[in-house]
Length: 363
Figure (tube, one colour):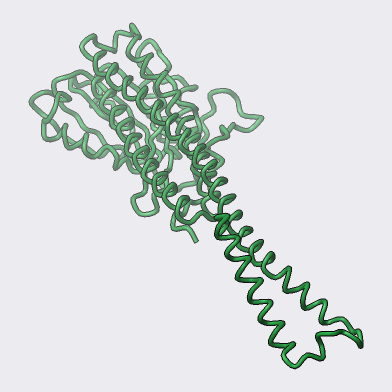
């Protein structure tokens, strides 16, 4: 049995969820994994010299922070809390269509430009270190004047290193505008793609080694699931490349000229990821060919052994059939050494056939 185990692929992530037929456009309705509880709102407010963290209980309390000239990172966890999401959207004057897409966790990554903000939908690929399963979560961003709102399906532990850099005043985040914060969040997500690809590459190498030494039906299932998983990741990364390219080229006043070089950098990363994905998909396709060849070779070896055994017993079966006939006058049956002679002839015939097979290099 193969040691590589994969859970059943979440097909729901492939098929976009839609609202009910009677729902009007702009209706905010959560379509992700059912959850309970109220959304949590964490706020990091900073400038080059100061930084502070707050946990907001009521979205209305954000109003006082928005008046500040400091940069604000508003992290909202749990997109299912439609009431809190609506209150935040009203406070930031967000379009209802954007709020609808934020609650719909099956949206395609994309970018929308509005007069006062830029709306982004990104995808986080989260690798479970124990099961080595990849889960995809939607991360919605709103880049505004002096703030970035990020909406997460679950606790955003992936962004803890970025939070630490801001708190400890490491890097450029404390010196830059809110567009750099949006870049830093996107950079964390894209760097995580490399981690997932590295794990997939190691798994492919492991399966390939197993295919050469001991191919089995489990390998075929793993290869098929790996191909589907690579297609899953490809569907996530391709739109992200387009999104980052738009961010780099947009003339929206919220994107500063000094920040464009950073978006260009992560655009190059997305191109590299897509090239790696294509290489991994080719390797996976080649592994299926290798599996079929290995299984065919193994089957041929088995058939070869069975054929040799069958060939060895053909003359023996013939001799046994002749002397097993129920005729009264069979000359050799009355011989004193007839039984021993039968076995002697059988052994000689078998040895001669083995020598012949050996010279032909069939064995």
